[in-house]
Amino acid sequence: MTQDPLRIIHIVRSPIGGIFRHIHDLALSQVADGHKVGLICDSTTGSDFDNLIVDELAAALPLGVERVAMRREITPKDVTAIRQIYKHVSDIKPDVLHGHGAKGGVYARLIGTALRFKGQKTLRIYCPHGGSLHYDPNRIEGKIYHTLERLLSRITDGTIFVSDYEYSAFESKVCKPRTAARIVYNGLKPEEFEPVEVPETADDFLYIGMLRDLKGTDLFLEALYNLKLTRGVAPTAHIVGEGPDEQRYRDMVVDFGLEDTVTFHGALPAREAFTLAKCVVVPSRAEAMPYIVLEAIAAERPLIATRVGGIPEIFGRYSPRLVTPGDAKKLTFAMEAALEAPGKMVDAAVLLRRCLAETFSVDLMNDRIFSLYQDARYGPATDSRPSMRSAPTSPNTAGALARRSER
Image 1 (cartoon, rainbow, N blue to C red):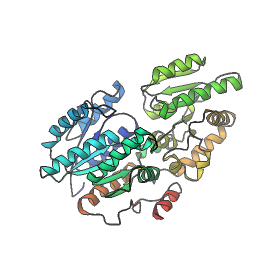
Image 2: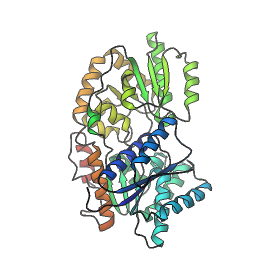
Image 3: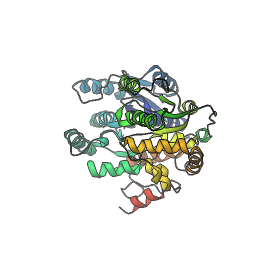
Image 4: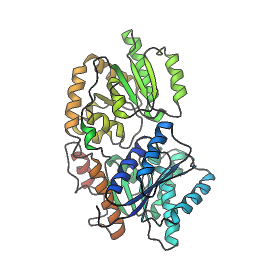
C-alpha cells in the first residue's frame, strides 16, 4: 500500500481494445496500492462483451465508472460532454485526471485546468496511445490535430508514452514534451506468460483485433485469397473482434469465395482465441504498443506481425522477421512461409517469449506511472527527458534505451 494515496480519474473515449486493457490493468493496480480510482468513458461504444468488462471494473473501483456520450470526431457536442464530466469530477476533487487517447487527453487537460482555476491542484496527465500521432503531418487532418496537441501541451503536467516510437512521433509531429515525460511499456500479468496449448486440429491462421483498415483486416483477407490462388486451396482462418468495417470484411469474404474457410467470432478473450489457430497474424498499418502482440508472444504462439509503431521494440533483435506494413504481397509470403515451415514458427515463438517477462509487466507499468505522477507533483528526480533507468532492461529494449539516452 502506498504512503501517498491519490484520487485518480481515468478518462477515455472508447472502452475497447488495447487502450482499455491498459486502463483496466492500471486502475486495478492503483486500487491495490490504496488509491481511490474512477473511470469516465463513452456511453455509446462497446459490445455486450466490452460492456460486461466495464461493469466488472466499475464494481472494483472506489470512485466507480461514469459513462458520457462522446463522439470520435471533434464536434460541438464535445462542449456538452465536457460540462457533464466537469460536473461529475468537480465534487470528487481528483488529485489526478489521466486522459488516454486523443479525446480523453483533451477532456482531462481542459477539465483539469478548469479545476485549477477553482484552486484545486489537479494533475493533468496525458497518454496518446497512438491516437492523433497516427495522422500524416502533411495532410490537413494531421496539421489540425497536431496543432491542437501543441496547444494542449501547454496545460499538460505529465505525458506518458507507451513506446519509444510514440515518444519520437510526438517529438517530430507535435513538440518536445514541456513537462515530466516517461516511456512506460504496456504490461502483462504473470499468469499471461503461461504458454497456451493449441490442439493439432486447430486451423491455420487467427486475426484478432478491431475490424478496421488501420489494423489491416483487409490485408489479412487479401493474403488468404492470394494463398487460395497460389496453393489451390484456401487456408482456414478465424477473425476475432468487432469494429466499424465488419460488414465490408464479410462482403470481402464472399467476394473472394472464402465463406467455407473463414469464420467470424465477434470479441473473445485473447487466450481463448489463441486456441483456434496455429499462427496469429497482426497485419496492422499503424500501432503504438499493441497488447495483442505482447499477449501472443507471452502465450508462446507463432506470430506474424508488421513493422509498425512499437512492435520492433517488442521483437528486439528478431525485428527483421517483421513484415512491411500495408503490403498484402509480403504478408502473403510470410503466411505461406508459416504454412510451409510450422516448426520454425514454433521455435521463434519460444525464443521471443524468453525476452518478454521482465520488461512488459503490469507491476513495472504501474510503478513507473506512479513515479511520473510524483515527478509531476514534486518535480523530477532526474532531467526532463523520459527515463527508463528504474526499469530492468532486456535484449528487446536495449536498442530503444540507447537511442533515447543519446538525445
